[in-house]
Length: 246
Image (cartoon, rainbow, N blue to C red; front, side, top):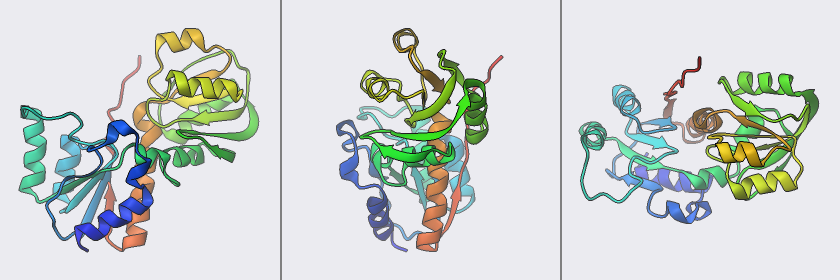
């Protein structure tokens, strides 16, 4: 299938106009080799490992959530040169779908809510809120760990959990925490929990389930969706940074 046909499909799944303003110029085809695509690779991040794996399987297109080129380039570092060389040497076009995929139907936050088994989902501008049968704090924490296959950090004295807000990626920020507070959620699952947040938002259980684990399930779901919809062999590449705890 021609690359342009696949791009049209991706723009239906996650329309570019859904993206935050800061994503302008950072989503879509970040490396356009105008090639025919016979095999697709999908991953959260365009790491060296991910690019090499895409090359090993003969992928013509690598689709990621985070872009390889986020800041304007005045010089090319050795690391960036290595990444680009792998893509160019192996004729791999690069496509990024970031905050547009966060907001999209069936995107990052919808899949995260689905993974946690939430019901009666209410979509927000970013993130969503859902319900579950009431469980204790400890049971809920264990449920998040198992559902997302990750360790977590958490804080809060809320003892029973039934109403949950989720936000894939870095969602422990003022405007989104204010929404969670105003909606009186029992727990908020996101990542990158900071000290000031711990001090200022004490009326709910805050669960940091890592940036990777809260966004990665949506990319895995995307790989399955593309293979089914396009009939093109698509491989999901899992490259978890595996943050260690002790």
